[in-house]
Amino acid sequence: MTRWQTVTLSFEVQPWVKHSHDLCGIRALNFLTQDDGSMYSGKLQADGYAGYNVVSEAVRIACLAHIPRKFVDALKLVPSNARSDSVAAEIIEMIGELYAVERFGKGLTDDALLALRARDSRPLVARIKSWLKEHRDKVLPQTALGNAIRYGLGQWSAMKKYLDDGRCSIDSNIADRDIKRVVMGRKAWLFADSVDGMEANAVLYSPVQTCIANQVDPYMYFKAVIERMPYAKSQTDLKALLPWALKQEFEHDAAESSWLPSIAPTGLAHLCRTSTWRADRCVAGFRITGRALDMGDGRCPRLLPADHSHS
Image 1 (cartoon, helix red, strand yellow):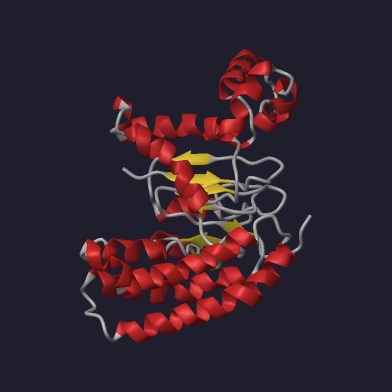
Image 2 (cartoon, rainbow, N blue to C red):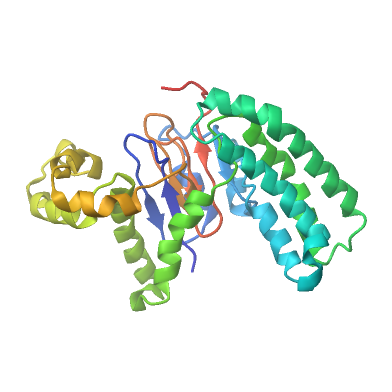
């Protein structure tokens, strides 16, 4: 059974996470359709999962991380004593150079990162595409290496769009990592082997992950909500119970400082059959305040609004 997860960027003022228990593409469509019926037309970063195709007006940006993974699978089939000189190792190393640029650019402003990518990443992207096209006709198409090359070329036009916007990440790995909490746990959770169980799991995981994203102790949050929910009489009262609304109240608690450092989020947010975004920026994705949308379970899309202006 697959799960969707929506996540927001780590630097969002009010980040939040929303889980869903299945993988239907219609969930992405519903989430990215506004009340007036118009569809999200900003940027959606994800892998090649066909379910995202229903969000037809969004600008698709592929997740680069899914491309080298297929070459890693091909490399595993090569004898260990020949791997370092293999074709698969060659392309993995070239893609690694793109990630080296991103590491160097960590912490830069959007504009500075955009300039860095134009100088260092764009020539690498062109060289890697030439490599893929050159080897496409040299490798049997039904082999693991042939499939990896074909997948890479199929995603290349969408993948390289991250070069055009400094807000875009090179991949959606933060959402992949976040969804592992669910993946690792579901094997032990006896109630998570049915639709109802997974739905209950998704309902609980949404506020827990949102607390973590906002650096709020989930235990303290649930305790406060359970105590105050019976007295909530309006939407304003309910909004006052959201994690970011209660955060200041918890900030002076000694317990928070003891656990937050180990779980403070880093990087950008994504939609991974999970989604992430920020409300002041876009009204699309699995989050209504989003700057990025990701879907988790290994397939992670990310949303950015069409408007490139920054606050």
